[in-house]
Length: 208
Image (cartoon, rainbow, N blue to C red; front, side, top):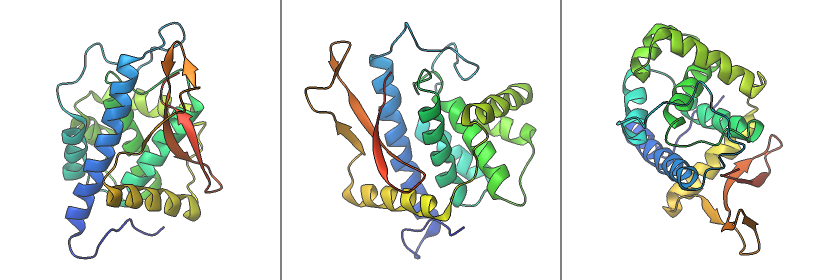
């Protein structure tokens, strides 16, 4: 599978730009779902912490980038897995209490699927600031949440890459305000652009 590239001048800087973009996107999603939760249907799972982590999403992603030593494509595949997970688990919206655990789980699974050489779960647990036992449980729950659908076609990979590159060039977070007629629990819904397996895009609610 081809690597993700924006320019050939400084690959590390390219990755930092991707990290900044993804962290901004995930931060907005988490904060939106913090403000507009749906308590009557939202599931509380092993991904939820009792308190919000003090480390920001961007710093968390930068820590993963610094210590994971994974191929750049793992970041894109991890984002694809997160997207799939939220589509398959609509009662588990991403918020500030679960986004970090979802991130480390998605990266662990993507590294194991994409790279020939990788560290064990104990190492990634230290990177993620959790115990090895918790890392093991997060991995299993994330896999089941994905329905073990780990394969990413070349066309899907390039579609996500093109989407991220386009949004980064526009320097605009890919959040789309829904039409005023779309109301849920008395509020206007916000949508998140996702990518289907056939390469087409669709819009999905960030909040349930």
